[in-house]
Structures are given as structure tokens and as C-alpha cells.
Length: 313
Image 1 (cartoon, rainbow, N blue to C red):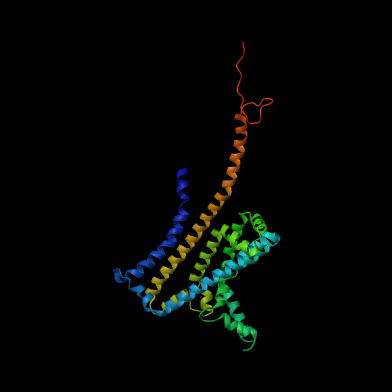
Image 2 (cartoon, one colour):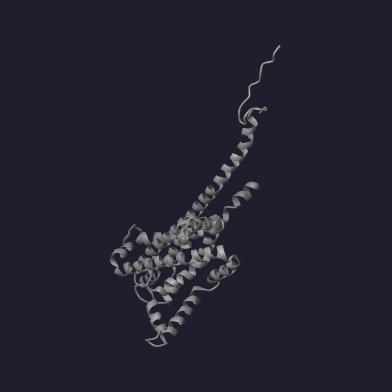
């Protein structure tokens, strides 16, 4: 009975693996075995279609800007909350979690309404100029801001958890005593100690930028997912082939993010526990060293050993 229960624990994992792997394997078979024979002709669109390179470069540029904005704003904000306003942490957590309850299509509709309102203020108005600037076709900053909002719930929890397991106040105070400013402390001291959470934020933001479709399509900006949807109307097999590559890339990024976060967390725990173990060993060795020393007699310096005298007869 115990063996049956032990093996039944793997059933949900196997079911999820089958649920995820079967569609991917079927897509790979459909893309690489047209007519029953192996062929990579579906992937020729990568070299033939120039619009793919444009969409890919735009997507990667959006991902880079999203990562920079996310890390440069979220890390200092969470550090400030931990140091000077810990009571405001629940407020920041609620604000960063709000995107989970707002559907992406609703977020896109709100962004479109805001851009339309800016355009209606007049061509020479500041609102209209800002609206045109953030919708630049080569670098749509409006997508950068929207993707930052989408990444907030997960990246905030990762960075917050990383800061809670390190002696943040001691690091900042020690760095300040050596003459470093707060920004130098964050860059040179805090960031190296939360490399795992920051790497998770980077890989997660990249995966979001590579896979998000609803907002980019609503804002009429051609990223890789939007390009796939357009190509599927003319070459469905090629769109499936590229979609499989994109899906596998996203899974690899998420796997690397998870493994890197766990690896750096384990290294951080090992570095923190090593001095504690050393101090415990020193404390345990102190009394034992004193106990092995010989008895100290009057007139004998401390630490000097005494030899027993022979009995005189």
C-alpha cells in the first residue's frame, strides 16, 4: 500500500509532462515531416523573410529596455522599502500584484484609450508629442512600460525574497562607514548578493517579451508573436516551425532562471552559514584546549606546564 501511494505521487507530474510534451512533439513532427518524409524546408523562412529579422530585432530591443527599466527601478524601490519604510512593504506588494488580476487585453485597452486621449489634445500639445514618442515604430516604449507592468508580480517577489535573506542593513551601514553612497552600495554590494533573483527577473522578462501577443497585436506593433500570426495566414507550416523554436527558447529561459535562482540562493546560504560554523568550532575548541592544559601552581606563569616532582624518601 505504501508503495502504491509513493508511486501515485508522480502521477500529477507525469500528467502535466504529457500535457505539455504531446502538443510540442506533434508540432515538431508536423513541421519537420511534411508528407511523411523528413525536411527542414519550413525553417527556410528564417533566411528568406526579411520581416522576421526586423520583428526579432525589435523584440530583442524591447526586451533589453524592459530588463533595464525593471531592474533599475524595482531593485532600488524594494531596497528603500526594506531599509527605511518596512511598514509600506504590504502596500508595494499589493501594487506590484495588481497586474495578476487585470487581464492583458484589458490593460492593452486602457493603454489604447490613454494614447487616443493624448492624440486628441492637439498636435502641438505635450500629451500628443509624448503619445507619438512612445509609439515610435522602431522602439515602441509603450510596449516596454506595459511589459514592465506585466513582470512586476513575479520579479517583485523574487527580489523581495532575495533581500529578506541577506543582512541588508548591516551591509548598507558597513558600506556607509567606508564612505560609499547609497547608489554605490546598491550597485557594488547589494546586487552581487541578490544575483539569483536578478537573473530570474532578467530571464523572466525576456520570456515575457518573446511570448506576449495580445498587447503587441492590440497596439499594432510587430513583434515575433505578431509576425508568427501574420505568417500563419500564408505559410502555416513555417509559422508552426518558428513557434516551436520560440516556445522551446522560452522554456529554456525559464528553466535557466529557476536553476540560477536556486543555485545562487544555495551559495548565499552556504556563505552565511560557513562563518557561523567556524565560530561554533572555535567556541567548542576553547574550553577543550583549556581543559587539556596542566594544573597551574602558585608562582608558575599561566600557560606554563608543570612537571611532577619525584617523591623523596
